[in-house]
Image 1 (tube, helix red, strand yellow):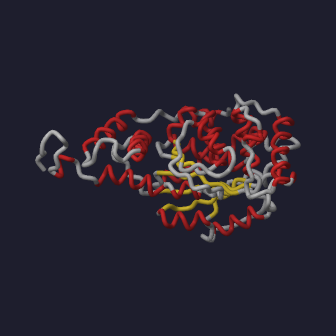
Image 2 (cartoon, one colour):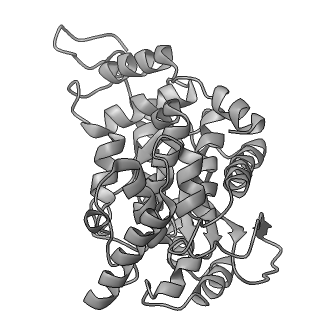
Image 3 (tube, one colour):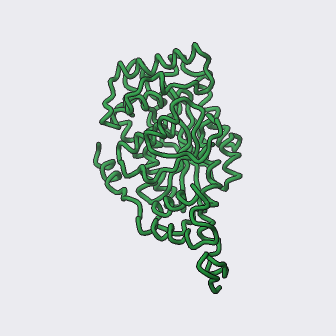
Length: 356
């Protein structure tokens, strides 16, 4: 691990336990039976610990969509050609993707980052952090060098830092890249030791023959590269993706600035697993939005110890599931700031009527 990455990891502190205690105490003073808001209460207590604010205010939110291509597409692992990545990125920059629609509803901005798209794209709203034009075919050798993986992680962390500097308080991990569920399955299998067949899903909707090719490509990549599960950078370099490494960096960068990170689906889960192996403390900053329909995502959430807020059978990616969870987070935080206490409302808390 290079020195810059070491400094980033060392800068991530544990959550603020006093803020969590104060948040829990305030919840119990609100005009409701204790614990009656269920998982919203544990959500806002976690958020209080992350931010250090007993009454969190997360008005400024950003979905960061990391885009990159994958050389493993040569193995026929996707129902769509690799050319779709730059085409969809342009659609997203124009505001026409599902993540744009959902983000407008949720009051979040969409930040698009070119981490390694195999095309030259110019757009005023695009952050260009391209390290190379897509990864190499991991079924034949390492997806990228160790240095490239480290630089991708640091680039993702820098995106988080820059966004925090302009006021962003919460992040959603998004991604775009044909072939990225294949790389994610390889990353997940490398870290967990589980067979690729248990983690490799249909992604963009491949048929049974395509799924067989995809699973075989993951197995071959693991066999050829022999990634070291105890070395997160080695795993990312050998069988990961530039956008997966970038999302891992985004998580670390957000955690270093005490910002919650809402995870999307399977690919976000693979990045989160990598981030947690680089820095176990970063796990405390992650919130699971949903469990996707992609095979393996539920397994990753279980490994991470995270409970999803939603189950909608989605498998689109882009950060869409993460954005749909934002209203729940907003509602939980609003309760802390706006709901009356027994004392302020003059409502009996069971021990007698309290004065307003």
